[in-house]
Image (cartoon, rainbow, N blue to C red; front, side, top):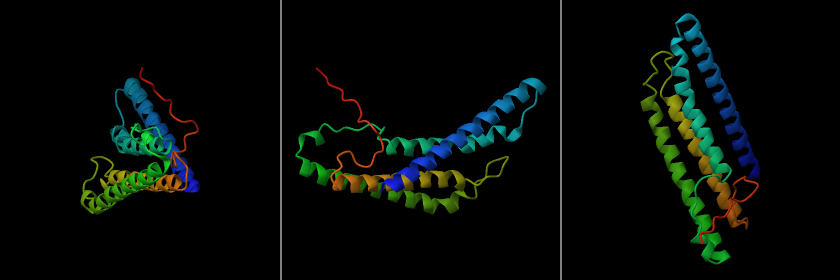
Length: 171
């Protein structure tokens, strides 16, 4: 399961680097062009809009892989380890099922949104929806990996974070 997680993390890191770099270069070039010549590239505003969802979805998946999303664990901390293991495995299974359901629903919408095209580049709307669907599939895989890890005795699940989140104690 660690190989799946590592592949997902590497893929998302690559998507984030590429999309951030391309968006930065396009916006800088268009700004320089606008100030130096008074004109701009027509497609220069559309391409960052198309790339931004990919950047965001990759960030969401990376956040899940590193255990960076908000959790409330105070209730689970009060139950015995055996109960915690069963409940955590069931919860991760439900999370994976929900992400799988969202992936399936998005898959069924791809044909519908493929007819919607961006104004200048004529990129089908299914490209953006495909990005969301891919993110949901990766989140489902990470949740399944977490269920597997918890069931096999690894307390935190499959999150790839090296150090646990700091505990906050309220006096």
